[in-house]
Length: 408
Length: 144
Image (cartoon, rainbow over all chains, first blue to last red; front, side):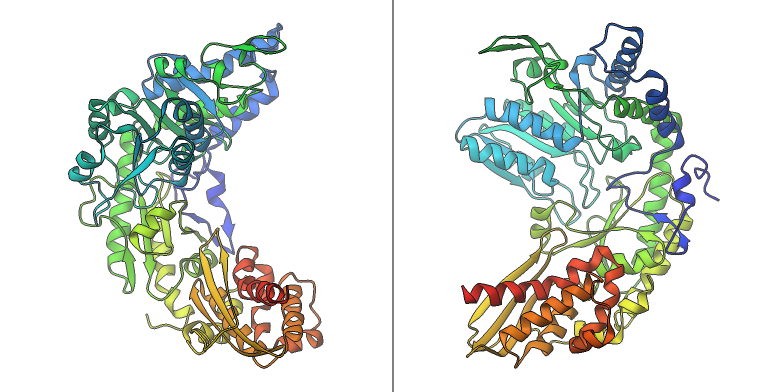
């Protein structure tokens, strides 16, 4: 029996007549009742438009919303609450930095350095900035184990580099990148560092000071919060000198016919009515995470990763990408392929056994091109998965080639 | 959805065969079809003479459903007029959308009927229609 099942009723469901085995946590996690109830309670008892009303209910709504900001600021090690900007997700947060910081401060022939494995959300916005400003994208290439060699870091981040964009954890290979080392190198040449923590913060402690991040983005929905709430952290002095991203209500100071001045942080970057229920849900998710503790999460996921990698190694015709020997700096994400079978067929066949995995390019097409593969299957774990889940996954995987008329 | 309704012998045989999966001599039209969200990608080649599809073949990568469906399609359209080919394409779309269910009407689709149950698998519909959509675009594009 799954010890977390009471908090996650969705895991007790059947899919295609089989117990649901949810192994697509890198795409989105499930939400515990504690989070669902917090959102529900906010809308049932405290809902009003934060910051707007002069009445008690609105004051309560504002307190909940700002309280969530404060909780998150502490959670990620921000120096001030106003360094936490609520967004829809990591993509919007990264776009905010690209449009506001990138288009304002990058110039012709400046270089933006980033690993080729970046998710499209931390890559396509920088393509936009490079095109608009005549800047250049310089890619860092991982080794066969999925890690960034020191030589790549030292040769690609140079005096010309003005911005380094990097994921804390790769969503394709699960590699944990040495963000601190890269940030130190970037800062030594005067570049700012934008860290995408969407894949790391659900699984490991993220402290923006320890990482050396100037900007840091993550999505709530991968760490058990509702969809549609995310966070941008930015160092106060950087955020202060940046122009607004979206303009409209609540982000202004004074508006005249021809001109406007803008509100201080964080409102300057939060135009329009915000997802207050989402922020409350994110706060509840942070509390739930802290209640379990990253140590326990890490231990469980490490066990599942080792168990799954050992199991996969015993199935013929299965290729696992990234580091299988050195598992230290690797999260619970496994990209793999079955010889002769397209990942979509693998996903459909596993689905018939109740097993949910991802198949495709994982929003990292440049990485796929670099690995010279069209697509992969991806199984990704969270602490609420069990060895039993891995067993069901492996058993169904063994049957895949048979369904396609190939030898097993 | 039962897997044996999808991964049938017809489908796996076409998927594992290269009978129709190759370049053809002197194609008059060659068109790429892509499912951007999943990365299925085929290039369809046709050699058309006097309104008749003399030869056809495809190359590319994709799941068993997209590859088998394209292969089955090529068996069906070779030797047919482009008008007949478009008619078959529309019939196929009708079947996959679940709009045409009458067995007599579907008879013309022959082996492609093996893909009928994809209509119950929304996630895979675009795989099944990729070859046929590419055909539609290739034939219509040529007429312009």
